[in-house]
Amino acid sequence: MRGLRRRNPGEYEFHQAVQEVAEWIIPFCHENQQYRKEQILERMTEPDRVVIFRVTWEDRHGNFRANRAWRVQFNNAIGPYKGGLRFHPSVTLSVLKFLGFEQVFKNSLTTLPMGGAKGGSNFNPKGKTDREVMRYCHSLMVELARHIGEDTDVPAGDIGVGTREISYMFGMYKRLANRFSGILTGKGLAFGGSLVRTEATGYGSVYFMREMLATRGDGIEGKTAVVSGSGNVATYTIEKLVELGAKVVTASDSGGFAYDPDGIDLEKLEWLKDLKFVRRGRIREYAEHFGCEFHKQRPPWSVPCDLAFPSATQNELSGEDAKTLLENGLIGICEGANMPTDLEGVHRFLKARILFGPAKAANAGGVAVSGLEQSQNALRMNWPRAEVNKRLEGIMGEIHRKCVEYGEDGGWINYVRGANIAGFVKVADAMLAYGAV
Ligand code: NDP
Ligand code: 2IT
Image (cartoon, rainbow, N blue to C red; front, side, top):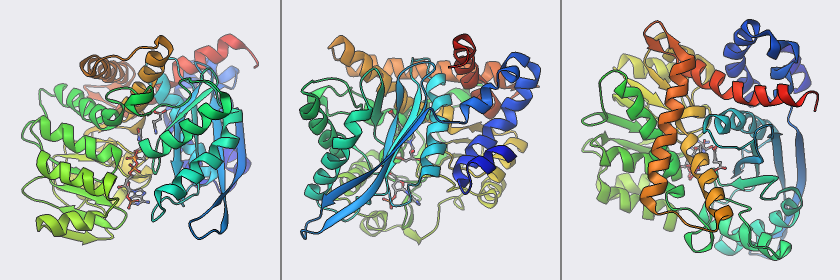
């Protein structure tokens, strides 16, 4: 870790993501000397390639603007690079390296042949018109197109990148390449998208929770859940929780959280989706509309619950928050977001031996269905909704099974250790087989 910090100065999110993995992989490599001898973990912490470029665009007032964009192609040992694009003012190289590093393990866990990558830009889509977003996406793709390909690197969405942005980028790629290919996932259903991709991360996170609860003879029905965020992952987490009989009492955004003690039902959820995805409004408006409490500039972790689903962003749940959740009787947590719990929080959850589904495992449903979208594109076919959903449930079950295989610890399952080791082994074995490449 000392060497990694020296080689990557100031990249705190990246250091944190590696530290969380190293805690479990270093002891494992000591027991399995072949990985240690060939420096597999060290090699895995160095991205294969990072592309950095300027994106120039024209805003609605006729001003020229410039942003920075990146694609971090981390590791393609087991398949073409795969991972989302994030548009948010907080995006830095450190953030994208942490996300790309995590993606390598996550994609390995899905059972599908996908390497790991991440990209994005410090562009802020908030308050921009559709036309501004279109011009931005088109300009970004003019450069990104040189670096991706359906057998090379297949980007998708993440924070600030949804169907609208993927559509603009796909349109420009298609024009530049003069080919219609599965170059991006999360596409619209009319042009190669997969059913259930939109819902997949949130649904998958709830399926993973269902698997964890089943190990204790328990289930989702009747549980009270706290969800953070109100974007793609959060809304479909809420939807599946409600369908399976849980009561979801919160949703949030960067402005604060709404506390709805009666529970967000499917009707209120439709209103919330329209608010966030069509009108692009704020969660405060949900609280105003349904007459419930709004807590400004605070995360929802003080609300007592059985299950917690952090589904907004990195480091949104601190050690202190973990303590509060545990004191309030938390049974299980699934990380819908990437690295939402800080290191102290992770350690507290592990010490309490609750059901803790780390991001790599719990939110892998999104990229898994992206992989299924690639398969459908290659076959030039579309599978029905029930078929994709069945495969998603099967993949989440298989990820859970592998976490148990590597994480069993005296009657308790350490899902963090399980997910890290299971994800590592497949990539590491491929790298061993290739030799020094
Ligand atoms: P969206 O852009 O759809 O939604 C993001 C949500 O998180 C919004 O409610 C947003 O609020 C909130 N948020 C973002 N940044 C912050 C912040 N700094 N502080 C507080 N709230 C914040 O993104 P997704 O739902 O797609 O992504 C959410 C998380 O899930 C991310 O960590 C992402 O990496 C992860 N993820 C996403 C997958 C996918 O398929 N989309 C797959 C696997 C993981 P506001 O509108 O105020 O910014
Ligand atoms: O973090 C993630 O797994 C994603 N944003 C989804 C990536 C993808 O390629 O679908």
